[in-house]
Length: 242
Image (cartoon, rainbow, N blue to C red; front, side, top):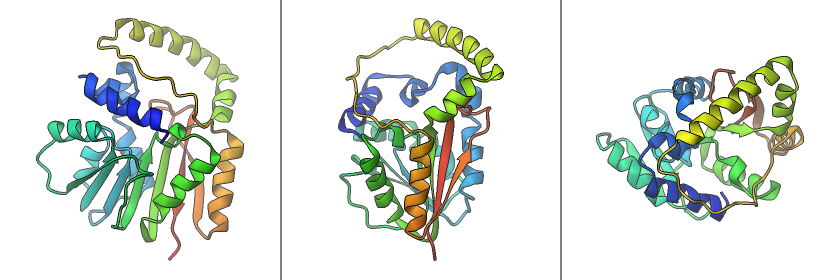
């Protein structure tokens, strides 16, 4: 993750009291947000004996429910985010933490499953995306699986917004967003991050090609339309060969 975005998430965790605001989603998406876990559990084929790593776990919106369904789970993120997570949920002994930017931390363990949700779009460029995924896949056991989820694809968004359903949806969406933004409390000032990658169809396919050439199984998976941004985002699933 770019340094600016990484520190912005830390600042959110320090300043905001509303966990929903920390995730970057809207209050009106609360019902849709609850459906994310089921989609992840299905795509990652979670099992009770899995050891899981979540890169960019934030304040635990996914890590906490995941901890009830797997053997153990480790979260990597800004120390301020992890402090909020610890304060929010102290009971489980199968949760572990690694503070710091994923690029900077050293991780010795290997994992059955890796989750990285709504993170890749905060990287700076294609080279950094490949370096990030390379490091993550190096932490998988043989036949382990990684889900790089909730990636905004501008090509997918263009197709949706140009459709009849998309135009109707967007008109309603803009009204709701404006209304919610006007009612938000605890607004904070964040540094503008102009060095963020933009994913399109070409880059999504480039990721598949790169890691398939390395021997991995790699796939693009659509999101259900009832997820918070399901109409415009996609997931990448990569499985390490035996």
